[in-house]
Amino acid sequence: MSSEVFPVRWEDGTVVMIDQTVLPAEYRELSTKSVEEVVGWIETMVVRGAPAIGVAAAYGIALAAIELRDKSRDEFDTGLAKARDRLARTRPTAVNLFWALERMIHLAESQVPDKSPSAIADLLLEEAKDIQNEDYEMCRTIGKLGAELLPDSGGVLTHCNAGALATAGYGTAVGVLRAAWEMGKNIHVYSDETRPRLQGAKLTCWELNRLGMPFTLITDNMAGHFMQQGKISAAVTGADRIAVNGDSANKIGTYTVAVLCREHNIPFYIAAPLSTMDFNCPDGSHIPIEERGRDEVLDVIPGCAEVYAEIHVANPAFDVTPARLINAIITDKGVAYPPFEESLVKFREE
Ligand code: MRU
Image (cartoon, rainbow, N blue to C red; front, side):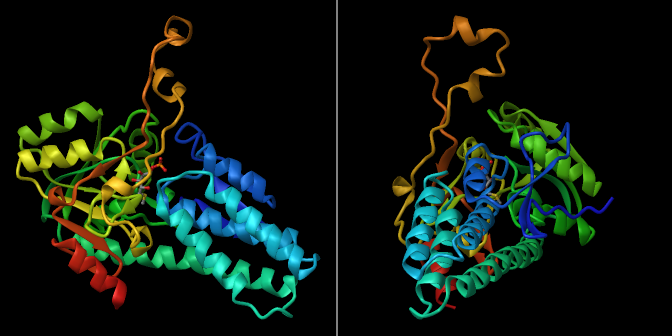
């Protein structure tokens, strides 16, 4: 069994996705030619993880363009804008979604007026494939750069899933762990289960298991204990949106991990491609945080649906880790150190 995992890809005229809602119990692939289906799959988290959502959205635009390829140029432009707006309403926090949509729409809009919709649709499909391939390469670079920061041996904590499943392949935070392991470092991963949707337990552990890497699954409330015991030497997570000052939104609970790291004098790293940077966002207070349904929180309490019908449940899907708690941000352009408003902006200019 190959250890490579590609959550979104183009095959025989369709978009194929690994259905991440049924892992690890079942491995199932879904395929579609419909942009509406891609919209639904992003919303229901068949595909999730910031860079993977970006790749899925790019293919969504390519599918819309293919559906519209026999229309007039005006109808094509209007239809594409509608598809963009619909995809943009799926999930608010991961900026990679908006980054990919903008890149795709910019390509379409920059075509001369007499270019045929059919020719533009071909270009858009190639662009979506480029976004996918570039993300994979960026993850490889992030992996190599980040692996250098990890100790030669020791426990490394990660939260949520920032692995191959969350990207075009290879992963950001898991890419760092994987690259360190591949270069011979004696890394033992601690994977937070990541309530409420359990991306750590269901997805990160599935990936680490396939890779044959040593790891321990822990519940979210155990991280402090293992740090206190000296079992964890570093923590690395992905990000969904990074503000100019370095404040980083990631899966709910990431902030708690960063606070615990500071208390225990353990370095806390974020690993993310530059497409996760929001250069229009000055700090974390401007990052929109997705609020998801109450069922995700209640589902784990057997038989509570009726008894708890009236209780208030909060379910923010992300939190913001302030830049002051982040030791470094590992990007595909290099490792950024504080002050991030200087180091990250420099990468953008390169
Ligand atoms: O709600 P999800 O599963 O899409 O959240 C995913 C995360 O928070 C990841 O850590 C983040 O997107 C980085 S993925 C490389």
